Image 1: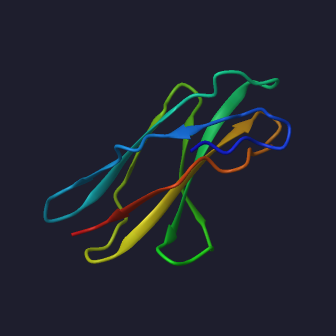
Image 2: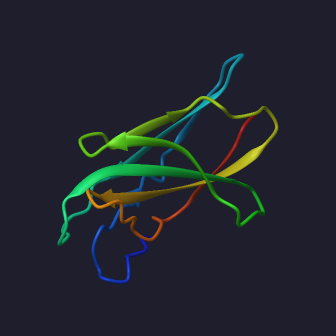
Length: 106
């Protein structure tokens, strides 16, 4: 599911195939699709994360507009996280969040 912004712009779709890297130090690899159409150019993307069951999202990273991938290396073993992405224009206006992806860290 993709959530559009109020203006119908900045639509970001987070990949349903986000992965957890099994290793001594875990990481989460996220990818998404750039907006298919928008009235303002995307300047960057904001990656947000919440603990499972929480509605309190925090920004865990940003990427340039040309990058539609992010690796979160600050995850903790045994925790479950929910991720969303927002596109941001050059004025700093962020879109509504993308669909979410939930991942459990082994």
